[in-house]
Image 1 (tube, rainbow, N blue to C red):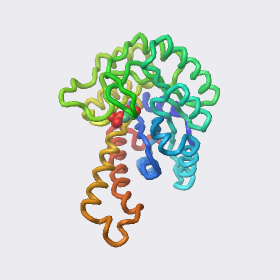
Image 2 (image 1 turned 90 degrees about the horizontal axis):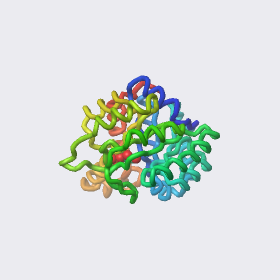
Image 3 (image 1 turned 90 degrees about the vertical axis):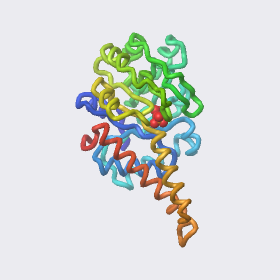
Image 4 (image 1 turned 60 degrees about the vertical axis):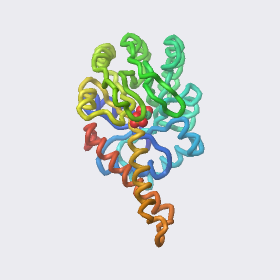
Length: 287
Ligand code: 13P
């Protein structure tokens, strides 16, 4: 059964580790992530962007697929199905469809509008026991057409949004979706420290988990980050493994043209990436 991300993130914050959010794009990715979480005895969050939602034939299809897998694969670790960077309307649709967690990304609105819309969603998600992530300070880079400049959040605005009763808060601390440029100055721990002091026990979310050096990940966790989002790294691993398989000509040999065989190396690569992240985040054995 899908669960809200609330309990797993409170435990993570208290235990000084982070739960990974891995974005899903299709059946293979979903299965790979769920099996790895089970093998690692780790809680996990499946992230769905609005673009991926459309690709996978809508939120109802995704809820059906994930619930079916939880049962058929015998998954017993806590799993949250989470809308990533949702619009207000997208969040409403996911709540309706049976997601157990949603993010409302109001970071591009003026703070008053972000507060008004977040307040509405706090009420709606609260009634259904669904966790809610809010964002302050745009995350840099591009994700599904949403472009952010990578600004640092204002700690006072973070407190205003946290006080509305959201479950977890994504605060921009110089993090960027996708690959980091060579001249990236690194995470702003000064901002993270200031946000952490303002929001107290509220679990903080680090987006753009791909390519952040391990020491910075560990420091971010020590300063209150309890959820880390990873997408690009799984994409790169999947693409690279598939490319190698095709270049080796294996797809043309014997039964290699079988789509299940073609997608298998990429799926294994995602499993390895997810396992490596769970070890780095410290969530192995925490289910
Ligand atoms: P990356 O694509 O940089 O791993 O970021 C993922 C993310 O933050 C999803 O919200």
